[in-house]
Image 1: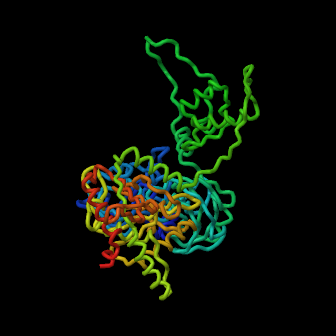
Image 2: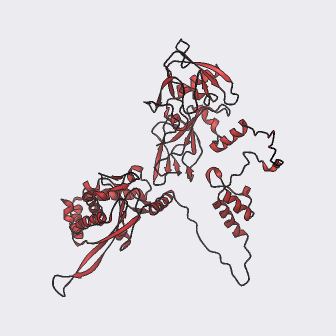
Image 3: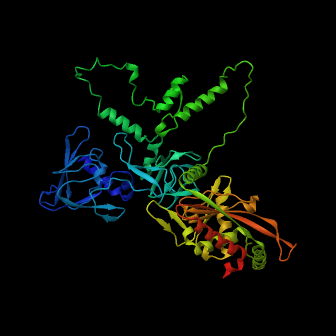
Length: 565
């Protein structure tokens, strides 16, 4: 009866079922008997369910539920969450067997199925509800590091906007998270109290899903989490295995085998004292007599990897100089190690992937920009008279690139293994260099917007990029990229790396004065020419298609009034 009362108490508090569906094997099901007794129907409108303990394997009670009722509250029982037998039918983890029909409810939407064994992706916050009977802690939620961008694997805590003990409500901002591309606000999903902050302000390299805070539903439960430390899944699994399945003793040996080797007492460390190290790192440590116990691993779950041994050897060199041979002198290099930001890590991995997997080729064209400069001067005069923002050459380039994509839509595409996806929207990513790294905010539907609107959005997004305050909607969904190093840096011509999954990127160089032949003999004129290099994915854009695109782009640059039609 004690467990039944706890079950009823906790079931009233389980108002947000999607958090359970995200992180636990699905146990939310509704049972409808097709025939008498299929689900233990006793004829009195109840379903009889036997719960077996995971350690003893014995039945620990018979519980009756109304036929058709939702059995999500069974998860409240620690000994029922892994039960194998429910009444006369079998229930393996993550699925059901037996002569019955069922519906699975996920986030309020009925879906037919045999059970949800996968955790759905977390878009805002990763939270799991804990009902620990062993530690004596009250009901609580472990808030994990959320995945706030498609490429995010780890993040940093910029600052907490809530303090321990504060009351929180759905929609309120808990903290600011530095993702691989920007700083994003993490909102609260449920009402309660912030009991414990595990990762404080400035915490670095927190993996997605790692616990960063704990929330409770009752204010009086806050003090119980003062010294709370979340347990690692790997350590928990190791301890559970060591306690539930003790090592078996060898009773007999085959006749052909030699005398069994008995391990020494010091060779069988406890699970919690075991040092996890990769084979390559272990061999390197043995070769250089490095004590593994003095090294903190940086690999998965604290595993010691080769880089940890190399860092240890490099640091030990400073305190223990190596003997130099006669006639040679040792020189110490002066250097500074600069931490790598999240955006630089992701940029490096994406560009490496691009150069390794995308077959690049490059096409360059020179365009006369004299008429473009004249048009820009006229438009800026009108802008200044009306109080608008000035239009830059880059704004005109973005407009010309977008209109050229509308003429040659094959370049507005991306590659997949099964098909080429050609986009109907022309969304131009604009490369912006900041102190934190390279950002590519997107101008959506650039072919349909006026020059003043494009200029306004570029300035606004560039400032957000420099402030590291871009949101996912500010940089996701681009179909083509423009990178301009001519105006700010004076670079004459360069070849840019394609921004996957896009199929092309346009690199804009600076405009320079050139002498060109005039109308008559011995007559010469001067003009300003700008170089534009198109990097193409040969899987999507053939050479002739790329040349056709540059021809259209050059036409808009040399006759800019056509962009206004």
